[in-house]
Length: 148
Image 1 (cartoon, rainbow, N blue to C red):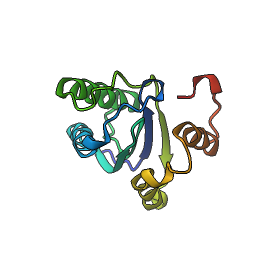
Image 2 (cartoon, one colour):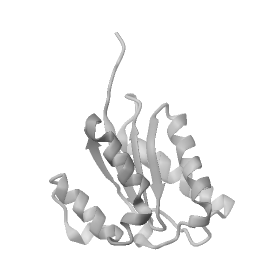
Image 3 (spheres, rainbow, N blue to C red):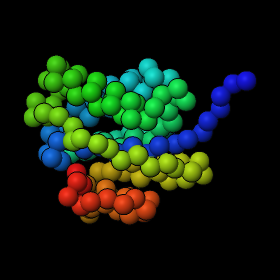
Image 4 (cartoon, rainbow, N blue to C red):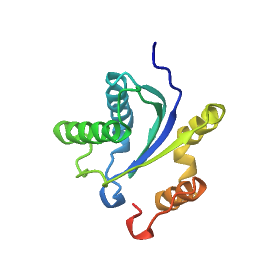
């Protein structure tokens, strides 16, 4: 028997201390690199976007891969690559941790649009407020001291 899954994850992580160190001039290169990591894990990317201080990914993960290992691979590989290629010279590291929220299949298009429109969204809301809103919407208990 084969394994079949349909679990969509909306994954969010930020740069260390939410510093605006991702060079938007290289947005497409960074996004393509992360897409390659996801593809190489036999996972599926639905939408990705980044701002100067954080990344949003909507994807499904291959059933043999643990979520924490998946996010660690993306953060580690992309971080090393950006430093080696001097893609974002101010980038030092990613913030510890991440947010991962499951998305219902029928909400996929809505979340894809949300991620695609990050530049517009962040004209009215900063990342910390956005992240706190996501945690609240999903009923996740958190300590404000540890918010990115």
